[in-house]
Amino acid sequence: MTEQQANVRYVVDDVQAAVDFYTTHFGFDLNMSAAPAFADVRSGPLRLLLSGPPSSGARSTPDDHGGAGRNRVLLVVDDLDAEIARLSAAGLAFSSEVVSGPGGRQILVADPADNLVELFEPAD
Image 1 (cartoon, helix red, strand yellow):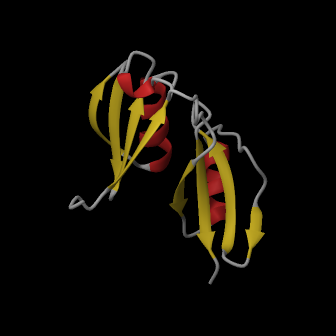
Image 2 (cartoon, rainbow, N blue to C red):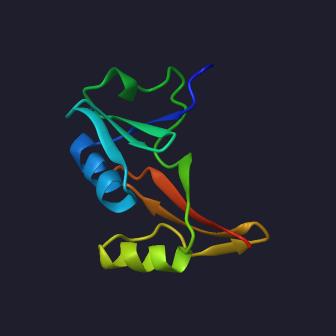
Image 3 (cartoon, one colour):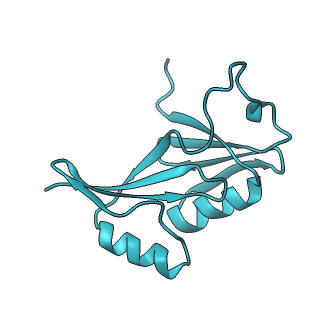
């Protein structure tokens, strides 16, 4: 593998709603859209491939592994409390409470298709 980016596919119910979620709330840039089937959004080395119902990428695996919410994208933030306040003011609801551990603090928020995004503030 020579490409220096991470590619993650999220299956979504509504491609445009997912594009709006990631570009509005997390600063992703729209690279390409073929909505309602597919869109590609990027943030640094992270590329999210958003596959809607008409997309071949949205097909179930043969043994039905996977499903929304089992995995998540982790976004590192400098100030978790400020991010929580910003996203709450934008009307987003969180899927968990803040969890603290030796490595830092985290909280989960779901995109419009219930795919999880973890906001993580590393410990000092």
